[in-house]
Image 1 (cartoon, helix red, strand yellow):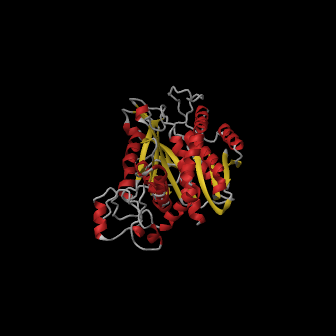
Image 2 (cartoon, helix red, strand yellow):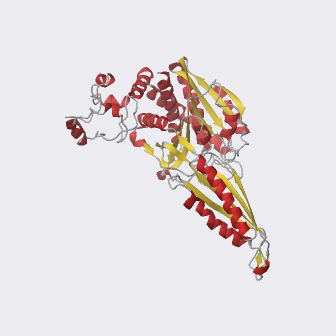
Image 3 (cartoon, rainbow, N blue to C red):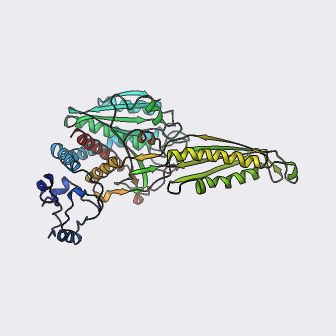
Length: 486
């Protein structure tokens, strides 16, 4: 009977030789090599099917006999074990991250104090380059605008390449925080955490540079401009060959998440974030006195009918299994008052979904509905659709590996599963052309009063998140390089 809480792994050699059994170290040191897993995180290849042992596990703290899906390949266990044995990498990373922490905080506060809007990140890029120079890290600048691509090449043999990405731009928001590092620029603020993303990636690059004697392959660090504004810095960097010479096999990105407690990360495989299209609609009629409707073509009434009709795009034309949002957030008229019907009405909205063929069909439906409803009432409609970011797809296998590695680095209690989000992110461009994993970095701390959402004037983070932001990136990159080299 398996009633010893420290015997989660036993007979390691028997599993490695292909026999079905439980594997365990009879030692508390087991967690130095394998995570203490939550239900749902174990490989079918190493589940023991004997009923008596399954019943024993049901009665213990280590019962995981369910339909497991994450460790699909036992070689992943071997690869992670190999890295940990050869480099003791987790301990080394955490020690280096702790040593570097004060500097990374300094990076973050400098960037936070001097924010720059999308496509204007010249000083931020110059600052990033100065840090890379000071640590002897090679890079290419002015990629896709103000983008920077840094390379850390391991000194052991290996041709594999892993990419890490952090964005650099800020938002047009007036900061209301009173911290010493609050924004020094009127009306501009890092309210989406890109200061955290950039400083975490700088820290990761430095740690990798310090560890390069112990790994093979290359880590490509992508410091990206203009995530917040179309057409998105990711698309411009890709066009400018940021993913070439060398070409990465996978890419990781992270984003701050205030609802998640600092010290944790969250992730979801598959469809994760929506495509984002901007809608600009102008409805034209013939204005005049509101008491003489027979002489008018009322664009307000036409607009009301169009808004109602457009809801059929989602409710009657769309597959209900495909997440879709169609919303209008702004409406105003040119002229008009209590007794004056305006000549035209303007609207602005957004369309979001997670399926590219349906996205195109929905655009066609919206154009047809706007035109036909306006014409039926004697008016005209002009709908402009600004094609935004595609939907973000987290590669299932890469995300599974990330989850396991994050559990190993942080502990199972600090890795959570996330739901689909209908917000958008230009990291999606990377995810459409290569295996990608975009995860959330916990930054909230209610005990410190750090709870404000992103894109608000009081947004801030618990800077302890920088330790996780740096460490998880480094550990994930090295585990991927180890897996690919094996």
